[in-house]
Length: 180
Image (cartoon, rainbow, N blue to C red; front, side, top):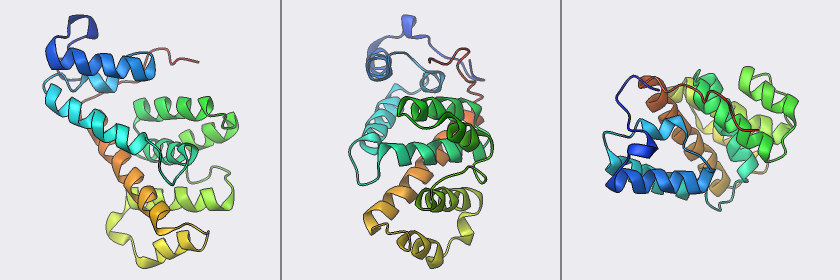
């Protein structure tokens, strides 16, 4: 539950029901985050399109996008998103110790140097966006990342800061029992 009224998927109608069905088809279940969109099925539909584009094929691997999602969510204290994306990392075969590190201490998680650079960039952008400089982008280039990859790193970081703020601002709680 959250701090605003939600419509459970069993009672959803119209556009909201269509969106809930889309989430359930994609994830195998409804997750708490999407229920907070109850007041605006229009924005839920737009959000699902946006998330679909972000999660679709890109130059940055799904694993690296989930590193960002988990680290940013942990840094923001978003328990729901940290739990969810940590689960996605485990499903992708990430080492459980690494997932735990990203979820509890993203700045200290043991990562290969290129992945460490991604997470460091994401954490700095999350904590202090006004402090970002060309040197931060150059540091990623120094690890061999292309401009397209750097764009996706920044974009993914910004996206998860947005979703974390919606979840935290409306009191979205983690799933009671996260799927294995």
